[in-house]
Length: 431
Ligand code: ADP
Ligand code: MG
Image (cartoon, rainbow, N blue to C red):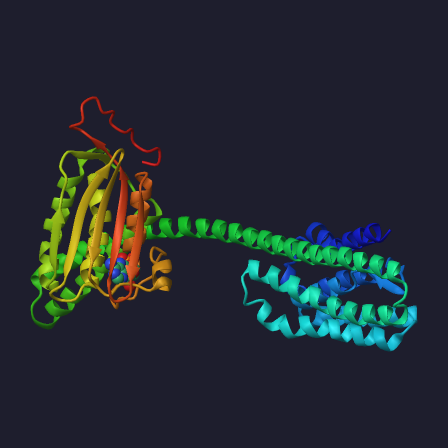
């Protein structure tokens, strides 16, 4: 039976993937051409060995390993499989010229697609593999079928059967290429995930190490700063100027270390009922001078009576970082809007500006440690804010258009003290 033989072939086609996934777990699919070449050659050899002869035609899935090897393994793997095909075909005998020609024709398509293949995403790669994998065997089939039809056109019953077989063959062929590509992608995905987990673990240890070093550096720095401040008061002339510079830079170093430590481990010292409107007011007063210096108008719209369980200083720090960014992004004469609204157990603080905005790439990098586009920036502000808000059980979302402006929405769990019988939200475990 054709179907049974073809299903056996499907199994053979999937063999390399299973062997790779189970035995060679540590080698990534796209980066081990020799392994891919050997495994796919094996599959092609078995596929040829178990091909099904019917009406003078050989029905098998020989082109699938060829396509998969070229697309997923590259030219070396593809070459190995093509060589295996030619060798086996020579050994099998028969119409060699047609055999060689079909082999090269089948290899041509994946060879052409090979380069652009890895620039696609996973879904498009699977689609490409299906199209590339189906085409050579389809073209070969057309040649062979016309041959058969021409030679015994009279036997219509036979041709019906051939037609049905072609349909079955086509379906199974598409199916097997799709499954092979899909499983390959699953292997790749698994590999990426494993690497990502390893990387995250490394980063975590590194982060802890850096935090402890930062902590150790802060103490001597404080002592140095203290003595320098004393000297600063007594000095005059050049030395006074130099010491002023030293002190500003020391202050900068100190604030970077503090920000970093804050990021590594936000310290919530005292949790209390904090009225959001009050905190926002305090923050905007704090930033008033800075905004005036930058020539930016800060407009505030508040809603009183909404409370959050928070460490006031931390929450203020988070808001300062975001609003300061908005002011810095805005041109002189521009405006920054801070508004607050609540819905049920959540409150939104929306900070929007009419500044320079960010493109998709910048937006994606926002919040990664040390990402900054400013000369004197630290790239810590947004990360710290995000960490603090997340530790409070909230989140921050950014929307931005290049040249138009940015909108940061801070979502915080809150409760309304005025609402009768309202249950104050319990603090988040992270706090
Ligand atoms: P820093 O302010 O020290 O550069 P941040 O983490 O606060 O570090 O911000 C990182 C970067 O994100 C900034 O350098 C800036 O390019 C971009 N950014 C943040 N907020 C805004 C905003 N409101 N508008 C435009 N760009 C912004
Ligand atoms: Mg900033």
